[in-house]
Amino acid sequence: MAARLSRRMLLTAALTGLAPMPRVVAGHARLRVGFVNPGRAGDRFWQMVHQALLTAASHFNIEIITEFAERDRHRIISAGRDILTQRPDYMLIVNEHRTAVPLMTAALEASVPCMLVLSGLTAEDIAVLGRPRERSPLFLGSLLADNFGAGAFMARALLADCRHRHGTESPVPLLALGGVAATPAGRERLDGLQQVVAMDGAAHLLDSVTLNWSRDEARDRAASLLRRQPQTRGIWCANDDMALGALDALTSLGMEPGRDVSVVGLNWQEEALHEVAAGRVVLSMGGHFLLGAWALAMVRDLADGKDFAEAGGTEQYLSLSPLRREQVGPYLARFGGDGWSRIDFNRLRQHKGRYDLSVGSVLTV
Image (spheres, one colour):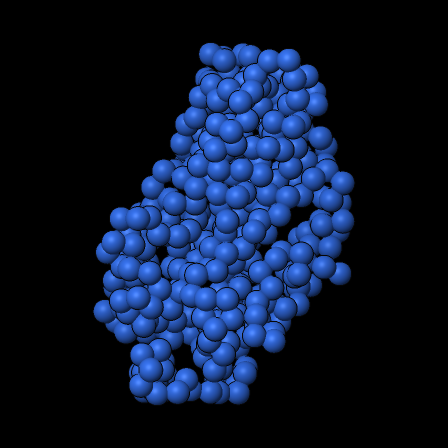
């Protein structure tokens, strides 16, 4: 306990300019990092985050203190507070269901340095917390996905596929299945879609709904929307679970995904990737399941005396990548199943004063 408190005191002093950053031998001083996984234990994407996090931790001499919170706001907050009582050296926080403010406030009160990952702050959250290191040196930074860019890329790909299959003579009628509005990642992806539709001039968003990232909920809502809007030619889905739900709905209504209606998703979940390979889904965006592992690399570097703020800033972003039909086979052959063990996680660490925040830099043979 004394050693952990000492490291936190030194870190605080270093970030406020009162003392040099403490240096330890990489991989020598074991770190304990807390992380509330906001997803359901059965959610394939959050399983991917969990597995990548644990594998990276084993590379970096880090112990992970974690718990699944089942997409329940109260459980996220409760689990986070429980983890903080165990006095981790660092805390990784996801702003799912707008939980960043209570969790970060609790972490700062406990003098635990924290980092935001996967889902960022809203304007209202920033008004309370400020930006990284603006009000507290213990709010270390953020490592997020470019969700706006991902949503826009998916929209352009969906429109292109619809026009390829159905021609360009009339506006393309679309439906959107978005994630919960209380999670910034969901809102940002929808914003990307809506900007593309607004700028396109020949796309028509018939309806847009927000769901709790669920396949079953997406199936039911998509079926209802398709009955009312049978002219739909494309369905934009904020994650792969909802894309799979959209496929279920199309099939139940006697429509053929990939022929009658084009679908896009996001997360690189294996079941969805098999649908991409079969031509029933246009593409899945992804790679951001690695963000938790990347954040571990950054706090490992920080503890070892290499501040990530000097190698790209306190707020950094990962651009998501698409997997299309021809790319799925090679990806699954390399990284399907227990493929995380084949990743060289040292590639996530700082090299020559920078981080290569590109999925391709990691997922290569």
